Length: 388
Image (cartoon, rainbow, N blue to C red; front, side):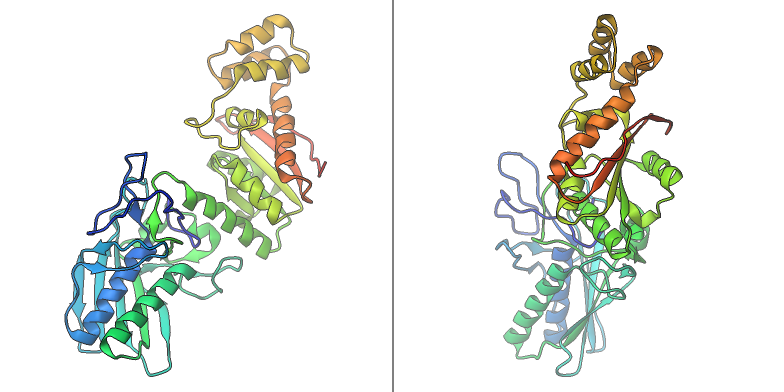
């Protein structure tokens, strides 16, 4: 899911795409796509060329950081009164489930006085940074540093080709971007008014989930910059409500962890906070307790045998352990334990906390874990424990 400053990474293993079509990832059969940053660069290149020559290159070819040279067909173009030109490119995210797939990314280029350089402006549908902790200062358009450099580089090439100075204002906009941004983490991170123009390689790797992980990192950065000493990694909206009710944490201290427990722990290890609470569904956190850092159902499964072992440690008899090991779901295992008076939820929470501390490797972070059921009821919790 794209939409936050920091953006989707990727490109390793991407074929040599071109001709305006996404490349195919080697060994996967999936099509790679292009970031909003790549699309904005293509649109800005076409618009600046038209501003200088009166003609829009279509398709327009750009060079991305890892050497890819995709060509983009123009979906919109308009030449002003000689002072500005606008070009638009439709984003193709390939086979990635990206909320910005199909969005029309526009760049309007205006000439500026000599020495002004390249100035970026947030047009309709592009957000503005309002909180510290992101790679851009407060008040700046949410056009990520790598796309900014890409656009500067391409403006310089066009200027050199046509004997111009390259002093321009680039207004980047995304049709319906403000509406699309509601499906991203931008509002929580303090990016208001629309989407971010992002990407570090220009290539979207399908299902890499790198944008989500980058959002986690930016969330930690924002929380630290805001002075929060206690943050919570939550698997979803229900667990967010739980930690807010438990601890009164503000919105910008909540990390949308999803399935990426490992991403939260590894980043907090490098950028510590005093306390980290992990909160999520019992089944998901049982995977963390078993040592899995990716909690997605397609990449890790609830191990009922592991749960039976924990229950035995908590006093369950052989018959109950056998029933837990043969349970259909993690929730069923929990219900069996609760009926027998065995605190399996607490045992899972404590084991998940200890796994988290192991990943933190002695970083100065105290951790606690809360397990909930689907209704948001707390079914297990650990004590707070600091570095081992």
